[in-house]
Amino acid sequence: MTRHFLRDDDLAPAEQAAVLDLAEQMKKDRFGWHPLAGPRAVAVLFDKQSLRTRVSFTVGIAELGGLPLVIDTQTTHFGRGEAIEDVARVLSRQVAAVAWRTYGQDRIEALAAVSAVPVINALTDEFHPCQVLADLQTIRARYGSLAGRVLTFLGDGASNMSQSYLLGGTTAGMRVRIGAPETLGPDPAVVAAATRIAGQTGGGVEICTDPATACEQADVIATDVWASMGQEAMQAERRVVLESYRLDGAKLALAKPGCLVLHCLPAHRGEEISADVIDGPNSVVWEQAENRLHAQKALLTWLLEQS
Image (tube, rainbow, N blue to C red):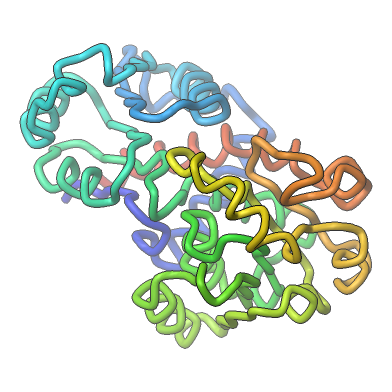
C-alpha cells in the first residue's frame, strides 16, 4: 500500500517517533542514506512561493542520492487547469515520490487518491506537517523527550501551523495550547481529532483566548506571521485583532525558565514576535529551519520503505 503524508495524523505515534529517530540519525550522518540512488527523481511542485521548503527538499533529495525535480506549476499545463488526477498519473510513472506546496487540502488529497507513489504535503492552507516534524525534532533535541511537554501556539488559531501543532503535538503526547482570538480559532474538526489522539497518547488540547494564560508554564512557545500567503489584504485588520498576541519578553517571562521559542519563518519582527525574543537566547528558530532538511529526508526515506 502506498503511504502518503497529507496531514500530521497520517503518522501513528510509533510511526512519528520512528521518523524522528531516523531524522536524528540523519542529522549526525548527512550522507549515510541513499534510498534514491540511481538517481531516482522526486517531483517537488510549487503553487506558492518558498525558500525553506524549496531549499530543504532540493538539498535533501540530492543527499539521499536522488534527482530533485523542482517545478513551478505556473510554468506547466497544471497552471492552465490540467486535471490534478491526470498530473498524478503522469508523475507516478516517472518519479519515486511527489511533494506539493499548494492551496486547499482538497487539492493534495485529490493527487494522493490517484498517485501510485508517496505524496507529501509541503504546505496547504490547512496544514504544514513537514514543518511540525522539524519542530518536534528541534524540541526533542533540547528536552530529550516530547511527551507531557506544554507547547503553546500564539496567534492565528485557524492557521495551518496551529492546526498542525494540534495534530502533530498530540501525536507526540504533548499538551498543546492554542492562544488565539475567538474569531480565529482552529477548525472544530481538527480540535476533535487532536482531542481523540490526546486521549490515546496522554497529551492534551486547550484553546485559550487569553494570551497570558496560554503562555503560563509553557515549555515551548511558537508563533507565525499573522497573515499567511494569500491573506495579504487582511494584514491591517490582523494587526488590530492579534496585537495582544505578539510574542514578546513579557509573555516569554510567563513560561518556564529556558522555554524554547519557535517561528517557522519568514518573521516580521515587531509584529507577531519582538526582535529581542526571536534573536534572544531562548530562540531555536535557526536550528528549527535546518531541521526541515533532516526531518523531510527521514520522512521521505520512511515513506519509500513503507510503500
